[in-house]
Image (cartoon, rainbow, N blue to C red; front, side):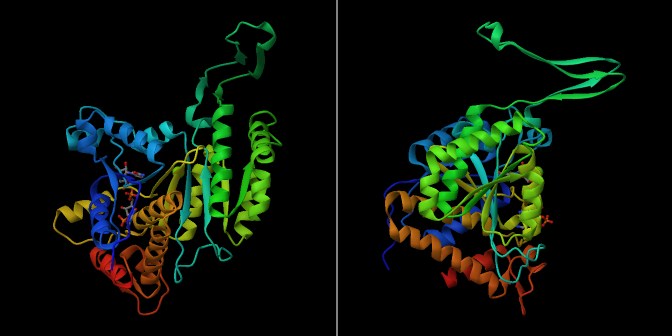
Amino acid sequence: MAKIQMTTPLVEMDGDEMTRIIWRQIKETLILPHVELKTEYYDLGLKHRDETDDQVTVDSAEATKKYGVAVKCATITPNAQRVEEYGLKKQWKSPNGTIRALLDGTVFRAPIMVKGVRPTVSTWKRPITIARHAYGDIYKDVEMNIPCAGTLKMIFEPADGDAGKRQEETVFEYKGPGVAMGMHNLEKSISSFARACFKYALDTGQDLWFSTKDTISKKYDQTFKLIFEDIYEKEFRAEFEKAGITYFYTLIDDAVARVVRSEGGFIWACKNYDGDVMSDMVATAFGSLAMMTSVLVSPDGVYEYEAAHGTVTRHYYQHLEGKTTSTNPMATIFAWSGALRKRGELDGNAALQEFAGRLERASIETIESGEMTKDIFAISEVPNKKMLTTEEFLQSIAGKL
Ligand code: NAP
Ligand code: MG
């Protein structure tokens, strides 16, 4: 059989530890036998990031802007211990943070669902995708310990010196010790977040929900609500109606109640903190972190696909001891299939899009037929289930494919 051809390269970002090993195995076992794979390769492995003073991360993000689609392996975000382990020049920043900042993107996380693994929430039948605004709020706040009685004020000094725009508010009159916090956000960042969400909803044909606490936060959260509404009305309503999907705004507490009663199958856009908390809740309730996929979407339509989990260090150390591991490659396979499908869409390459679908079906059917890695084995209700090593599992998928 002739291999599927590609016209435009995918940006390939290699990574670290166990996922780096799985990365190569996925390519060799599942992709290269069927696709004449064209990639522009960037080695984001920690050693090479250190050698290039992290320039390789910036280059890979620039290449993603140029070509439009990237697939990324999990990477180590160095801490003090990693600096020692790898003899690093410095404690480099999180590659995901660097890439997200350069692409100005929003991260969408969705679970891969398989028969036999029931979500903890019994009504959930389809995936729930969480979109988290990844800028500002408590993650960029300024905090104070208040030592004694006194007045806390918030003052805005306009850069242009226009006294009419100056604002001063008393936050609180303290009678004794306490704490305080100042947060900010930007119209530009909120607009980018909104556009990325509306685009992704259209892309995937799913309804979009958005929630804040605008009844209590009458300026801060209200601004989020109004920006979403405005962009929806001006830029997306017509397309949403044509696609038969809806945009739905509600309060965060009402959203939580509705999500738990829902059947799933929609995107839930959350402010930064809500997204942090809710994505862990949703991931856990769907079964396993190893089954969460993640895609970074920029407001101008650039896509970077990856697994939501990390480099699975504990398994890697076992691997280094010569033990075989049963690490789940599903999220990394779906990062590849997501990227190949998107590349196929952008290039009008039907064969590549079909291949992405076949790869996903073969992977899901393998688990549903009872062959799975250890993490899924522990929770699957499929009769006569069998626990496989990563390599055996990939071979089994290859057979179905
Ligand atoms: P992790 O790599 O996600 O793994 C945590 C635990 O979750 C594993 O020990 C394993 O549990 C389970 N797990 C995760 N993925 C799995 C898979 N595919 N198959 C089976 N089990 C899986 O998180 P971490 O250990 O906290 O972080 C390791 C490194 O990854 C860190 O250096 C961190 O900086 C990096 N990281 C990178 C990204 C990214 O690039 N996007 C994201 C998060 C973390 P058991 O040990 O119980 O089997
Ligand atoms: Mg979290």
